[in-house]
Image (cartoon, rainbow, N blue to C red; front, side, top):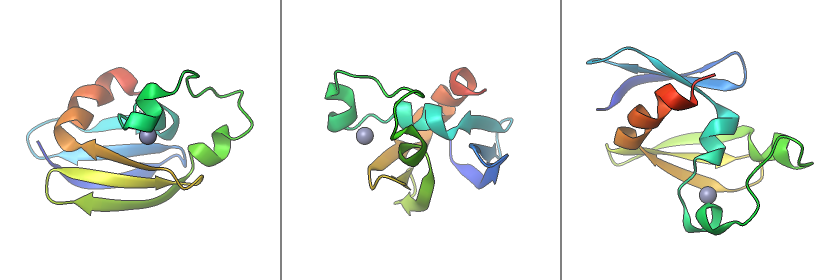
Length: 97
Ligand SMILES: [Zn+2]
């Protein structure tokens, strides 16, 4: 399941279009919270809106393709997250705001 298009909507959300399925939308905050890298997984303190660095941590710096199975997001705080499209598709409905 690979998105045919990734759009930024309402400033704070990403919308993914799929050929085989309906579009999915996810907020940048939820996307950052669902980062599965070791640093984020092992963090004892979950990312929270009330944290002073939250706006930077959830601002979008760059989106790049990773092979043809994933995308990488570089966040405003310099953190880089990789999201496999397969996982993104499954996670997006629950994450959508
Ligand atoms: Zn991470």
